[in-house]
Length: 358
Ligand SMILES: Nc1ncnc2c1ncn2[C@@H]1O[C@H](COP(=O)(O)OP(=O)(O)OP(=O)(O)O)[C@@H](O)[C@H]1O
Ligand SMILES: [Mg+2]
Image 1 (cartoon, rainbow, N blue to C red):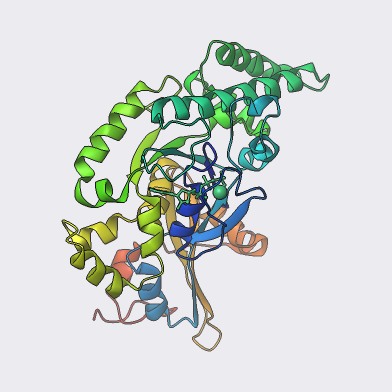
Image 2: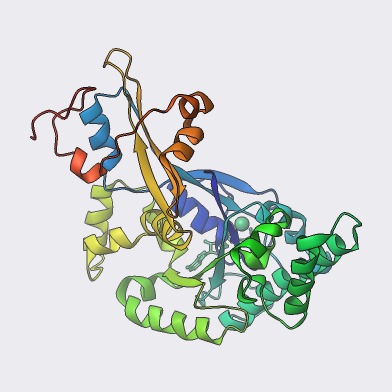
């Protein structure tokens, strides 16, 4: 399963800075002027798994260990009127439509040197500008589809329902569609049907020394958002600039640095950084699970232990086999499924049986 996550928000709010911080390298241009990003940036981000994959690869004596990734997509900023063609962000909404989840970056720091497109920082108003543009973009997308003669049956019925909801200011995910209704309009990639994680990008001092207050403030903002559905949406606090500065350091350097600045809980803060936390949050919000496959052949032929991302709900071994390879699915006779955390207690895993625990 290919999981794509889009970073959206007003221009100059820190999307590319966060993108680089999560990627742990400088890929996207992140400078202090609106529309710094034009063409989308995309990068794979590994999903942390407490080193399980590498431990399993050792047990299986694999030559390679391939982690699962989510793909992070950084697009141009959206401005008021984007759905009518203002700015640049709307040109790339098609890219966002292909994503599974939206990370909505909201500027919550008041560094006066950083340009704000509307001249003042107002996290709630800013987030609503973007939310409204996403909603309006969906409305015109739905209406264009409804005008087509090929839009019939279930799809048409559901889209009429969605159109009404959007006209009343309801994101498609808050209309109460059943899963079969959602399935019938899946190919449209409606933006407001995607789950949203709001990321409030705060000042580094607030993030390092007073995360509880930052979190409480973020929660208060999220609750004021008309277009946010907190039953479905989540929120988190980051300081993209601070995390980006840390991203070039090794784990040890990070720890030393965090201690040196008196970060309240240096080690714990390291665990809180977005490159670890966000992929896990995405996994939770999208209800995904990690599955590992290893070689079922002799060590000479054994090559790879691999992590796969699958939906938590109802995937059979046969479906999983099909995802690996059509031929494997055709030839499946039986499967041995073992909890990964149990398997790593063993020295090795052979075709015959598990060898003695370590
Ligand atoms: N928490 C923060 N505190 C202070 N400055 C920040 C913070 N996060 C990002 N910045 C600064 O904001 C500026 C804009 O950042 P960035 O280029 O990442 O924004 P963007 O949302 O990608 O913009 P665009 O939509 O134009 O591509 C940069 O100078 C960056 O260093
Ligand atoms: Mg950018």
